[in-house]
Figure (spheres, rainbow, N blue to C red):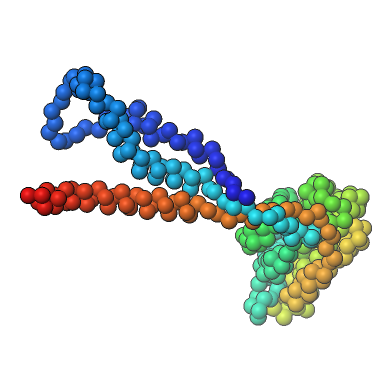
Length: 337
């Protein structure tokens, strides 16, 4: 089916004539004889109609080019048969702790020392990109929680926003309850069997307005499944990295994270290394997707290139005709003599 994406473009059709009527006439630098009674001469000789017809013939090429440009600007396209979008996955929100403790360098990635947040970016960036057919969103939380990316099929953009997350951007405390509450607000209107929150943190809840266990009970009532991931190296691993002042494992409230997961039907994972965090991502990857109502879309083949090319060729032909008109006239005069 042929369709114009922007048919209102044709409202610009009279624009050249409006500009010609409203703008002052261009001054000619050639010597000319001005006759004040030309209209009377034309009426007496009966030549006005022929002059008008000749004028329209001269304007016809320009009118054709203008129409072709308008057709191209209106974006003609051929719509194929409606096809279903691959929307048979989950609605998955990823809540990532960006408090100050996530900057602790007790992790390693490919043999190099790295911070907890950087390791989450490396591994869960791939996790996000592999969510084919899922709507994925991103929440960043510290002292406050805010939605960085709403639920979307655009996984590349969500990964980019995760990669751009900064330590302390939401404060240096850990508001786990507020992060869960914000996720519930965004997931509430989605299908009940299709809502998942993955919460990644390295500390105990010490900020925010909503208690984590209260938020977990609300999530259970809304049938939102929460998978919690506690991140942080064990003391012996930290000492192997030369971090003898290690205290972060004490701050991680595993009992709280385990209770949140169990209350909502999810699971708790502890990631003390890149291998463990990668294995956790693979475990989450095996979650059974819940079917969604398929969305239909039309595959559109853009056709604007044809009228645009025709306008370009007509412009080139008109320009060449103008350039060769005078040399051709001189040649014809010489040939006649």
